[in-house]
Image (cartoon, rainbow, N blue to C red; front, side, top):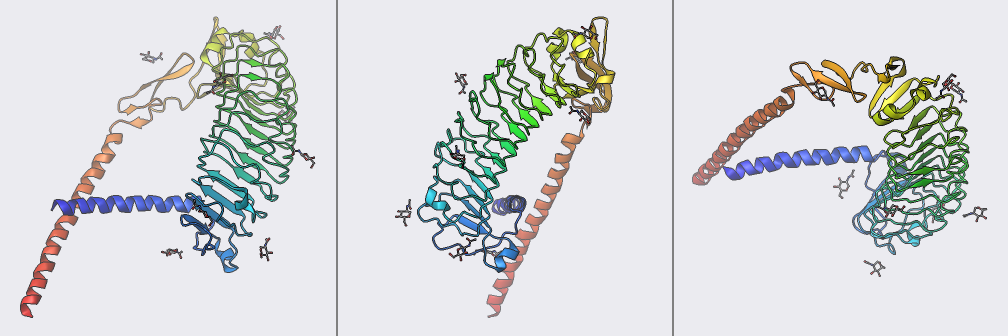
Length: 420
Ligand SMILES: *[C@@H]1O[C@H](CO)[C@@H](O)[C@H](O)[C@H]1NC(C)=O
Ligand SMILES: *[C@@H]1O[C@H](CO)[C@@H](O)[C@H](O)[C@H]1NC(C)=O
Ligand SMILES: *[C@@H]1O[C@H](CO)[C@@H](O)[C@H](O)[C@H]1NC(C)=O
Ligand SMILES: *[C@@H]1O[C@H](CO)[C@@H](O)[C@H](O)[C@H]1NC(C)=O
Ligand SMILES: *[C@@H]1O[C@H](CO)[C@@H](O)[C@H](O)[C@H]1NC(C)=O
Ligand SMILES: *[C@@H]1O[C@H](CO)[C@@H](O)[C@H](O)[C@H]1NC(C)=O
Ligand SMILES: *[C@@H]1O[C@H](CO)[C@@H](O)[C@H](O)[C@H]1NC(C)=O
Ligand SMILES: *[C@@H]1O[C@H](CO)[C@@H](O)[C@H](O)[C@H]1NC(C)=O
């Protein structure tokens, strides 16, 4: 009987996990997965998928390989447009000889600290390249990207990357999106982004940047993320040549002052976050440049120490962001030497709202809990109890049927033997 119970539990867990695995496969491969007989040179764990219509012509468009690949044996079909490699031990330039048509190239789970210099050389068609989640990767070879003039997106987030050499991104004139977040990049060299004339999104959050000299000439850049670094100083001309910038996040650094003139050239800036920095004072002319600034992120301490006139003189402001709360600027008042805030409409859904340290503080009505008083008490624990009761009932019923069913089966066999 205990065996039967264990078997049932095992079956339930198994069906659940295979269901989960099925849904993951469905969401990660946009093309219809189809078995294509891989060339014999592919090593075992490698798996090929092709889109159904392409399969008719036996032209492999998507190659997905996970597991260690023997690089000297690997041969890429020359019709491949999308190449995804996971947990490969190492990469060799010879692997990518048929890659002239590749537009999407993703590599994850490298165990080496660098990649060969030549692997992208033949990929003149490449649009998207990702090295995300290669935690052991420390550096990129010089001129790694060569002259990939079609490359539009690069994702090198969550690696161990520490330095970017000056010509890392040279000649990438079509690049629009560059994600370098969650690495260990120290200070940026002058001119490292200078060829990126069409770049519109640059993410450097969660790195180890401690001072900000000039970011360079990026005429198309509209979003720049520098939050969660260790920036202490900003050069007054650091952002001077970012004429298209609309969103700038400098929060959670160690900036003490915003030098006069830093924001002067940012005429199109509409979102600026400087919260969670020890900036105790700002000059009256700090925000003179960005006349279109609608959203400003600050922290509690800055509100208490800054000259209130600096904020009151800003005519374009519409929202003040403090932590994760967004206040309507029309609802904020300065009176009697302190700031007064009204609670945002949904701050406390079923409760009363007070402002403490410029943050909503909810007192929930009976029957509700949570930071925003939106969780009915009891529902959290009620659901699992219900599920447990149903599972136990179903399990017991199935068990009884199995045990008795088996019993009857054996009895029938016995009877049959006896009849023979
Ligand atoms: C793919 O191959 C496996 C093993 O050869 C087989 O079990 C499976 O049914 C095949 N899938 C399709 C869609 O042909
Ligand atoms: C990779 O393939 C080559 C050529 O077939 C072979 O000589 C070598 O031993 C293989 N390496 C590994 C690690 O299997
Ligand atoms: C792929 O290789 C075959 C034969 O080697 C050749 O006929 C075909 O033109 C190549 N296709 C591409 C897209 O290069
Ligand atoms: C950029 O392209 C030019 C012209 O093709 C070439 O001379 C130069 O070496 C390239 N720069 C890098 C860093 O690859
Ligand atoms: C961050 O950079 C500083 C020098 O600016 C260095 O001393 C420190 O070790 C770096 N942190 C890490 C985690 O590499
Ligand atoms: C300021 O914002 C308005 C409305 O969003 C826009 O029309 C205008 O072009 C902006 N000005 C600048 C200098 O970006
Ligand atoms: C705010 O504006 C008033 C009137 O234009 C001006 O006198 C005052 O100096 C300004 N305050 C700051 C801190 O810029
Ligand atoms: C929030 O309000 C409660 C009750 O009014 C009070 O005890 C608590 O200290 C307040 N929290 C903060 C952070 O002020």
